[in-house]
Each structure stands twice: as structure tokens, then as C-alpha cells.
Amino acid sequence: MGMISTAQLKRGMYVMFHDEPHMVVDITFVSPGKGSAFYRVKQKSLFTGRVVEYTYKSGEKIEEVLVETHEAEYSYFDGSNYVFIEPRTYEQYSVLAEIIGDDKIYLKEGILYRIKFFEEKPVGVTMPKAIVCTVVESENSIKGDTATSAMKNATLDTGAKVLVPLFIKVGEEISISTETGAYLSRKN
Image (tube, rainbow, N blue to C red):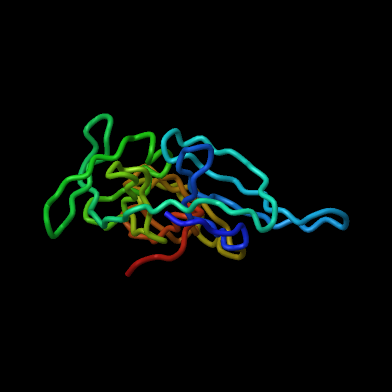
């Protein structure tokens, strides 16, 4: 763990804040007309998941936290933990449901996820940029209603609800963004 300057802060970095590791969620540089420049940083606690906003002075030193990463496939939910299996060693990692949070709708069996560890304890999971899901339920569209880029509601096999173009039918596979939850494309 080394010290870094506030100018080196980036989204996704891990820093020590009040003796607890936090992930930088958002960072804004502010340079007022009078006074010193500063960084307004939103950071999420790796232990509690609580997001706090803190203002750092420009040039201030912050302790960077080293977080270990393992790639593993999602396997199943045991009621309180999401279980991932490392495909080469078959080692199992149990991640608390609170850590996954609302991202549970992006968990699919057989997809590799990056699990973050701090002091050998899972503290986060990085989702792939996009995943392929199957449409299990959608509204019926009216024939000829394609003059605009109209969208309709659809439910996916993961439980995610997303807006899709009118031509998407039940049973089709689509790609969705895990960052925005938005429809990306139809898979052939």
C-alpha cells in the first residue's frame, strides 16, 4: 500500500478512508475562482457498502489500498451468499448478497466475473461490460408501429427489466449493458 496524490485518483481505485478501505465511485475536480482547487470524491465502503462524499485538497496524499482480484464463474445462490467457482482450481468463493446488491440481475451461470478481495475477504464483484440474456416476457407490439424508435418493456431470464425495440420477441437473446441496464443489440 502506497501513498498517492489526489491528482492520481480515478474511478474504481481503492483508498483508505477513516481506517476503512473504500472504492472511488465518482470524482470531480473543482477549481474555484478564489481559493485552492479541490477534489470532491464519492467513495463506497468495502465493508458496509455505504457511499460517502468527501472533499480532498488538491495535492493531498491518500493511502492506496491493494485489492486482489480473482476471476471466477457464477454458480448459484445459497440463500445468503452468491457462490462463484474458479474454473482452473475449482476453488469456491462465497460473496455476501449485500456486496452484490442490485447487480444480482446481471449474474448468469458460466460467465466469468472478477471478484475483489481485501485481506482475503471478498469485498466486491466487477461485472462484465455486457451480458447476453433471453427475453422471457414482453409486451405485444402493433404491426406497422415502427415509424419511430419506439420501445417496449421486457423481462429477461435474470429477472432484469429492460426497454427493448418493438421487433424483439419472447425467446430471443439480447445483449444488455451492465453499467446502464440498457438494451445494446439482438444476438443471432
